[in-house]
Amino acid sequence: MDLKAYVRDIPDWPKEGVLFRDITPLLANPKSFKYAIDAIAENYKGQQIDAILGAEARGFILASALAYALDTGFIPARKPGKLPYNTCQAQYELEYGFDTLEMHEDAIKKGQNILVVDDVIATGGTAAAKIELVELLGGNVVGIAFLIELLFLNGRSKLNGQDIFSLITY
Image 1: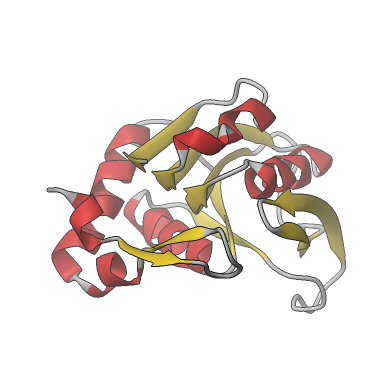
Image 2 (image 1 turned 180 degrees about the vertical axis):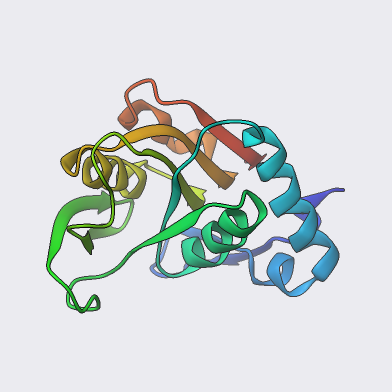
């Protein structure tokens, strides 16, 4: 299936000069959404994964569906002030600014194997922050999966040799 056919380009969003890859049409189509989740799940089938970490908002959609497909838990990482329990946090740089992610301080037990999932890898800042949170709590990042990778932004360079899987590349 040509998943790129279900990704809409939105120029100058969220700011001028950024070409946003909108996955909403892919998610809205049951066949493309199922295909994407199944393809990512197939890559990790048989691996020991204790939980899948996804960040809001689109990362939640993919990570929770993938956790279901792989029969494992889901860990949310959110913007500051959105989680009700004690949190740890990591700040990261986007191609168009800075942001922070928080996670419950008891979300990961020492030694657990965590798969990090997100919709897009651009500069790698968000993924690096999620890796930082996993390692802060003593977890092991066993892989990082993306629906889309923007190769020209070289986000992999911030991920220190992590095992990375991308379904669509630009």
